Length: 85
Image (tube, rainbow, N blue to C red; front, side, top):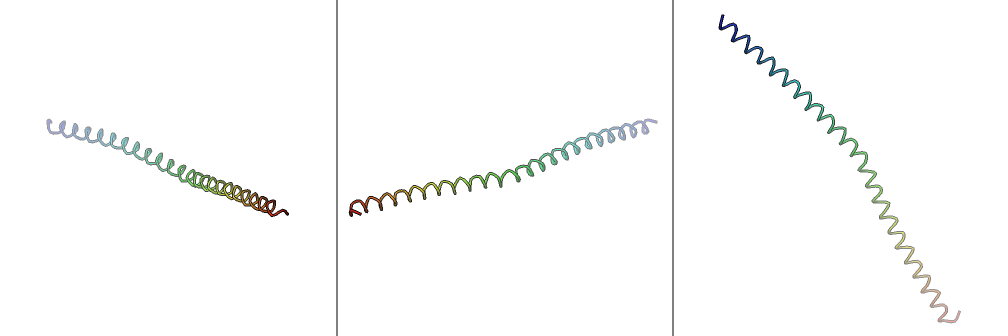
């Protein structure tokens, strides 16, 4: 009789442990799903950030080029005035 009670207690302990393990596995799987979703969102946001940085670089270079053009035009106009034309 004592042997049967001990076995039943072991079985209950195993079942309880198995239930707890299932809960932990479910929580881990939920966490993995959340991480995957976060990675997908970051993957979509990252190209936009790179695109914005690229546009900032292009606009900065355009402003530099515009400034250089104004300087060159000013030099040409100044040279023409010096030459008397």
